[in-house]
Amino acid sequence: MNTIGDKLANHKMEIFIGNLLRAGVIISASVVFFGGIIYIFRHGFALANYRVFQRVPVDLCSVSGIMKSVFFFRGRGFIQLGLLLLIATPIARVAFSIFAFARQRDTLYVIITLIVLIVLIYSLLSR
Image (cartoon, rainbow, N blue to C red; front, side):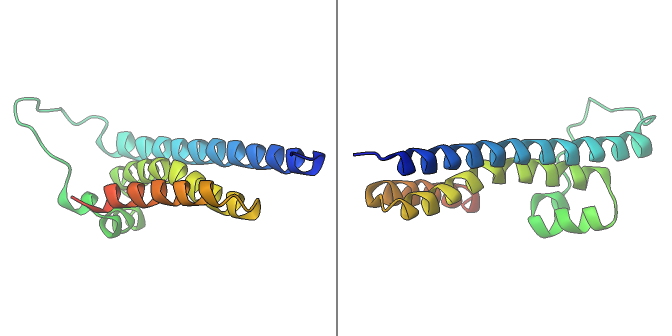
C-alpha cells in the first residue's frame, strides 16, 4: 500500500532523474558546441578531402587521450568529451536508480537495475 510519503518520495525521485538527464544533455551539448567553435576557428578554412577516408586520430579513442587533447585545448578533444558526457548521462541515471530503489527497499528493482548497469558498463568497456 502506497502512503502519501511514498508517493512524494517517488515524485522527488522522478524530478531528480529528469533534472539529471536534462543537465547531462545540456552540459554535453555545451561542451560539443564549444569544441565545435574551437575546431571551426582553427580548421574552418581547410579544404576537405573526401577521396581519402581519415579515421579518428588514435589519441581520441581513449579517455586519457581525450583528456590530454582537452588539456591542449583542441576542438576535437572537446567534441569527444561532450560525447562521452552524453553517454555517461543515462549511465548516471541507472546508477542513481539503484540507490533510489535501495532507499525504498525494493530488492527486485535493485537487482534488475544493477544487472542493467553491469550490462551497460560491460558493453562500454569490451571491444
